[in-house]
Amino acid sequence: MKATVSVTRTPDPRSPELVRAAVDEALGLVAGWRDRAAAAKRIVVKPNLTSDDVGWETGIVTSPLVIDAVLAALRRANPRAELTIAEATAVGLDTKKAFARLGLAEVAARHGAGLADLNDDEHVPVDIPGGVILKRVRIARTVMEADFLVDVPVLKTHAGVGITVAMKNLKGTMPAREKKRFHNTGLVDCIVDLNQAVRPALVVADGTVAMEGDGPVGGTPVNFGVIVAGTDTAAVDLIAGRLMGFAPDEIDALRRALELKLAVPEEEIEVVGEPVAAVARPFKRAAFPFSHPDNVGIVDGKACTGCREGLRIALDRAKAQEVLAVLPYVKFFMGPGAARLSADDAAHPERNILIGKCLKGAANKDQGCWVPGCPPQIFLITDEIREMAGKDRLFGRKDDFIVEDDDDH
Image 1 (cartoon, rainbow, N blue to C red):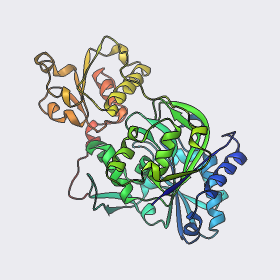
Image 2 (cartoon, rainbow, N blue to C red):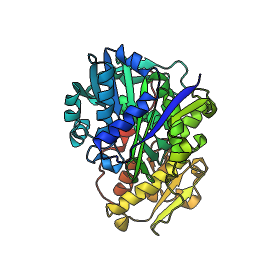
Image 3 (spheres, rainbow, N blue to C red):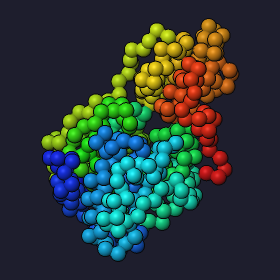
Image 4 (cartoon, rainbow, N blue to C red):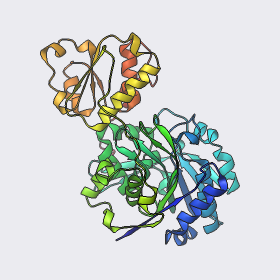
């Protein structure tokens, strides 16, 4: 079945009127969603609030102007529905603080909508019969009981998986434990499985202020002025990726979904509105290899992008926190080819940090400190560096982030 994806532009991402016009135009080019929305009793809008203390001009979080425009369109389609903005921000952050920072209480009130912190929600088990890794996942009841779910992500590069747009944004429908489990078990395949369990009826991707470079939070904002909309989540990701200069095989979760025939191939996607070639610009990507100080050594055993870029960004953060200057010599190991340490390295476990799921077995042999994850979360690598330097961890115990699969899932 073919998918339609619309692309529209606004000349000023900071103008409420012009942003609303771009959203309305994008939605006007996508068929079928209005009838479904008009029949819904409960409509849930899921933005991307990856931070709780930054403004939308950073490109890190969904613009409240886009959220406002989406709510207005939904309210026109259905004046009677229960309308909710729902999100569970990143692990360790405060969703309610994120709502307040972006003024979303005022945005919601304008349209008779509510706000739901999904961390406070009941989370219900959802079976995934064809899951690659997951057979069951817990999802917020507010999301699962919605008659019409709208995914409103940001267009951002991502050091671990290429880009993050609509498919990965669904991680915010889960409790913290599930998010940790995704990173422990294998983020890419888990995202693909999640998209079989949670299926938005509509996607409105916010590219008004996007992000390039070290996304999803450490990159550079891009005044892109773009809205991408459709009813097929993976198709929106594919076209959004093209607009950012990424081929489908450079977007990890999308590539996997295409391999498994869970996504519509590019030749079956119809782009309406602005042509991709007229809008696309190459977004800067995270860069590896990189220079590092003499007190840092790196053994790269054919690591994936997530480990490589995660380490680079973690070292940048440690430098900004003035930790690298007081760090004793430390050696990082990553990738399956680094699991067999040399005799010299094995004799000095106190200086070794082993990164990612591939090296879990090596870490169990007491050859160094292990950072869990596939890919590991950047803040955990930074905390390990802080601890090695004799500084307090900022995100608590590492063991709190080690979550394996179990019978309940």
